[in-house]
Length: 136
Image 1 (cartoon, rainbow, N blue to C red):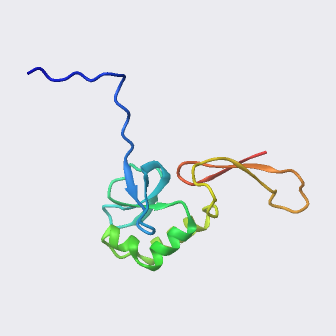
Image 2: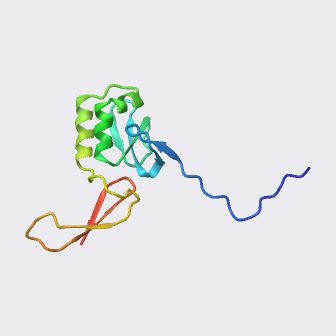
Image 3: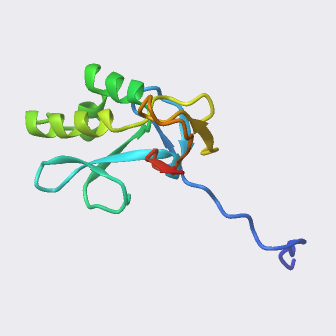
């Protein structure tokens, strides 16, 4: 028998799925932040997703980062002890994350200006890695 031919257009592109090590929710790879244990043993944030080493994924939500560091979920996923200098770098990255938004689908919203004497509003949007971009 001849193989069946598919009808229709091109095959839909598969989106890689990853699990947040803190809250265990499955998301698309681009919606999570990768943390990598490099071959030298250092633990660092990998915004490109291409660094060599063992990786673990977290949401760009400070609550997930707190949970992962407190429960040692990140250490378990990376199969290493996290050095104090690496922990401080991860905590500094977490502190730079925006607070959890009601919708994590990358939509834009408006936020009041950061200083009270300015009356203009800023346009705030988040990138797929969770970084905040502001424009006036």
